[in-house]
Length: 147
Image (cartoon, rainbow, N blue to C red; front, side, top):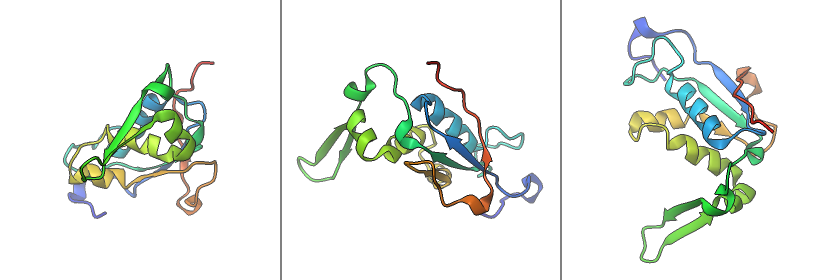
């Protein structure tokens, strides 16, 4: 994406890889959203796309606290009458674990064109492998869950 203000360019966008194993979903999502928005940089400005790319691996091993596996419900609507679909977090974590992280992060980003551009910089994968080795991502530490 071209830089809007040449004086604000800090160089090429960085790529970070985050291991979601034993991470609490909300804490992981808030850290990832901060990187995507660019709030970790001194040149942060809310109206400019200064964020970096984030790769999340091991999405199936993310941890939800409390009774969220059974009580948290994700809802979507097809737009047709009676088209409401509901799925619990536990079932979604078994079938599409990438979706759980994507929805948590997207809820923390702006609901604008800029927010959608930030969300496109997020890549989430179920297992430990990802196809972005050529970007040479740096590991990003997020606080570990206490056992």
